[in-house]
Image 1: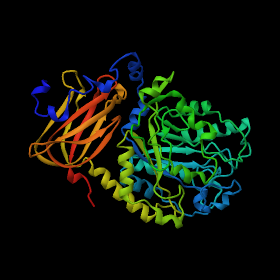
Image 2 (image 1 turned 135 degrees about the vertical axis):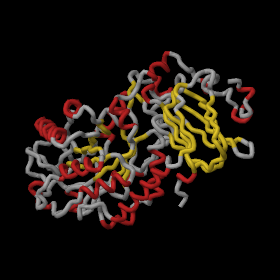
Image 3 (image 1 turned 90 degrees about the horizontal axis):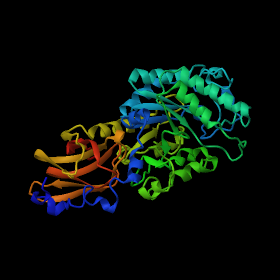
Image 4 (image 1 turned 90 degrees about the vertical axis):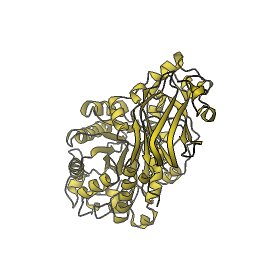
Length: 475
């Protein structure tokens, strides 16, 4: 391609692209090759293709109206009489989510399944049925993936704080990983009360148990496969890298970095992590070991994580949830949206309505394709990608995806649109692409150009798609 002959050249200045300038950074020196050697596992790659799923906080706290239990509850205190897991799964699917993770045991120690290792379970409550079984079966019926949350901190179990507790925990983990079908994610919480016994969890043993019994599962947060984004407000970084220093896989297992009090949850929601740098070249250069450790954004649809009737007014509107979706799934992250069932054992009507609206918005992104291509690896002879539409089209979104099997490469890019009257305008300037970058657009165009300004080696794009404005709900 002779760029000087291209009518866009003077506007988009393609001479300053990865193939020529690369932002002044080396394109493929030995250090960059080290970054590119880091790629996702099969499990991580599979999850990147289904990056939106739901969290269901449900249990003793639902019955008692608390966020954290006291450790003094009895099984009889779980007074919920009916549970409709089919409604949970149908609502989650309608939201556009691909899976569901259930809080099988929260910090209070109450177990939602038929466990052989404690009497403090749903089987000894008035309800008397295995809720984990019901939830797993409901997910299977709806084609949803099923995951489990198991709190390492346990206020109720008498062996907590002794080596015997690691046996207890692994025994219960084994029950969950062998009795309920395929598990797509195991979520380990780092929260631990200030007054809790000083005790080091045997994390390596926990991980070995998961790998052995559910080799297809990712281990999240206090685990090596998915990292906590750093807040519970749905915020992400401007540049959310998946290649990061290996020591970050242990960050949340260190108790001082985790939640210590029930009220700490509100402070976490106020954190702004947009200035945090986890994966730039400057950071990676200082790290001896690197790993593929993508971010998971956990955020609740309402103020609390468990259902409280007095918080019905805090349910986030669909527009806000959709914004979180665009800034998480559309910014190289997974989104774990918490939806807590109420004391009737159902997702309440207000939450359900919002989730259905969210699902329509998510599906609308790609509903009206204008052009979809799979560029593959860019060559030095084609440093800029040009696209022509069959006619002037009202654009709603552009969706970009890198080929993650080739690592994460793009560090900066610009998107231009060619206008029907002949002009060209810059529609977006971005940093990373990763698994998915969703760019909202609002313009009529006859073509587009993608300029990669900076990259680690030659960019490898799995997909680029342009979609009609009809695909964006403007309400």
